[in-house]
Amino acid sequence: MPFLSRPFRAFLSLLPLLYSMDAFAQANLPIYKGYLVNGFQNYGWASSLNFSATYGGSNCVSVIDTTNYQAVYFGHADFPTAPYRALDFWINGGPGGGQMLQVGGPLDGSPPAQYSLGQLQTNVWQHFTVPLSALGIPAATNCSGFWIQGTVNTAQPVFYVCGMQLLANPAPSTVHLNVNAANVIRTA
Image 1 (spheres, rainbow, N blue to C red):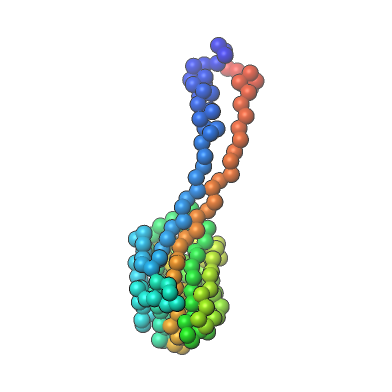
Image 2 (spheres, rainbow, N blue to C red; image 1 turned 120 degrees about the vertical axis):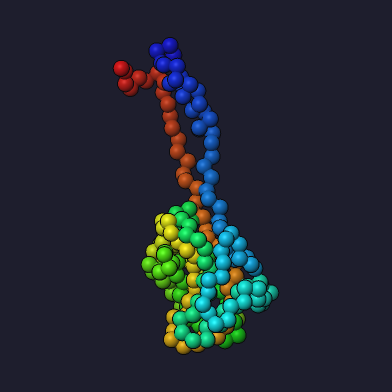
């Protein structure tokens, strides 16, 4: 290939290395796994929050909403949500059940949207995966955490939350490039 410049030949010699590189996805980000992790803190405003409770054999947060619209808030310094696709957690309605709750992902203290969890079942661990797009924060740069909040203007029985994490976006698709050094596209 004497007609190709030295820098271009060097570039072509590196193409096999680029071809063999794998793209890796962002890892899931645990928020609460029996204790708060990765810089998340208790910013909740429910009357009673216990971040080291145990219920049904699981380490969890117990939440008692004794008035109106109280919440457990897993707060954090502003962080980007683009690497993640969903908020994933388990929740149990405890012995009373029937709680009406919603999830929010605040930006600068206020959530663009809230996601209803409906009515919790009694003594059943329910699994929720809430897309960040449903919270209005799929590519935010200033998310300050997540809260689970009562939606009724009255007291609600204790409920339990465990295993909260952000699920990562999948790895990007593999892109295949073909180079034909014998095919000159541009000459100068």
